[in-house]
Image (tube, rainbow, N blue to C red; front, side):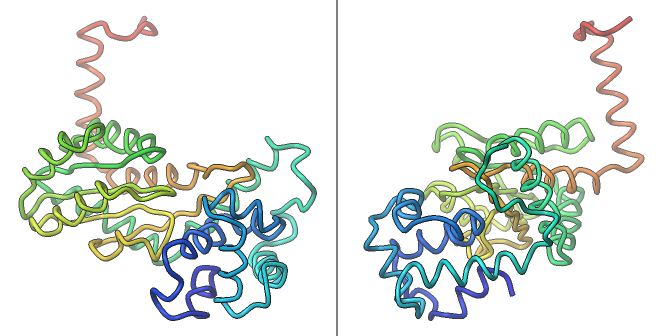
Length: 277
């Protein structure tokens, strides 16, 4: 059972409330961090006060935060092998970051995720056009997907920036089109609303996010859930980029090779690259 499923099993849907849900999201997204942190550190990362952390633990059936932390730590350690995790403080943050990212990518390769990755690629292939939307940290993976997807010969367009501009592009979606929403950490009202509207317009909706319980899942035809656990305060984007690369690998067929060749020849004709002979 995943950390997210374990927490969901301990309370009724919607019973925690918005502030407690923010605490629960930290536990799901960063179980290694949470398994060794104080209630104050959890509160700081969740953007709530310490008493909210304690109340959340009690709502989940524990006496307080120390008891929840102990159970969370045990479950997290059971989910990874001893060789994948260093339990000492981050004396070598670079090495710990790389080890954590390896763990995240390994956790990404579930049967459900692999099926969703293949289905997302098929949706892009079948679509008249594909629109990619995101916000915040998700802009990086979104750029990778749109840029390389376009080179592979697909009409993949990126809509970032002002909500009004994103809304214009979503309004142009029709049945047979595809929307890919990439969300990491906090979910904005704009991103949620645009995803809902794309679904209402008949587009195939593919969501890459870090929570299976994300509100975006309600609108998703295909849902890819990527771990973002990090040894630092913010999320790690490595697994999300790996998911994007996996989608792109499913697009790599003979047509993609020919499309990429046309782009390469155009770059040469325009003398755009400084590394040309």
